Image 1 (cartoon, helix red, strand yellow):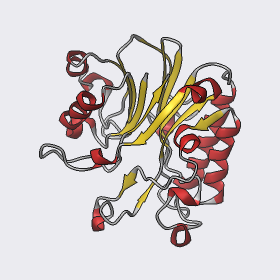
Image 2: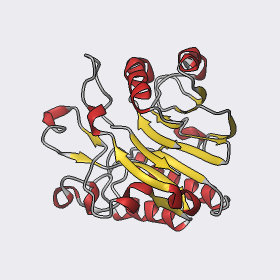
Image 3: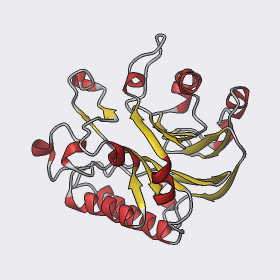
Length: 256
């Protein structure tokens, strides 16, 4: 079973690119983030033609999350409880025996911005929401977390320490999610890995390897035991067939 996560940075702008990737990688379940379109404009028919059902929680111009799956998906949660004012940022669906959640976590903008404490509060709400679940079930939480959990996950720890994505407060929130029974599938298999999943479009950051790892596949222990391969799909941060990529690369994992 292949699962994946991808911040597509606007589905309408990236639809043909996403279709190329789906055909190349053939995932079974995918969490998409930053759709930037409302539910009534989601291209269900396009994904149906590719063999994927879709469930979505969208929002006009901003945010938005969706799950694509080859098997039927039953939505159990749309939106993070108590955080509706921060936009459409979470959806959970049951796909066979897997509880699959995708999230688009707030950016926070900067540590001085009013959105920063709201970001921390959003993560507190996410932790409380996940704490109500059973860590013994097959469950995945994936998406764009907008946090670099460790120094290995940033190209410039010394220069960015204490700045957005790199603060103790953010890292503490991420660590608390792991304490709720979720593990970082990439880090499980690549304990010293320094791959990144996001690069700024500006300044040649991608080619200069000035990136961050902020996109994650987190799994409960039963999922972690099944993980055999986890890859940040760096080649799909490059143009494909003349189409412009998202500023995020997909991340996928193969499970037994």
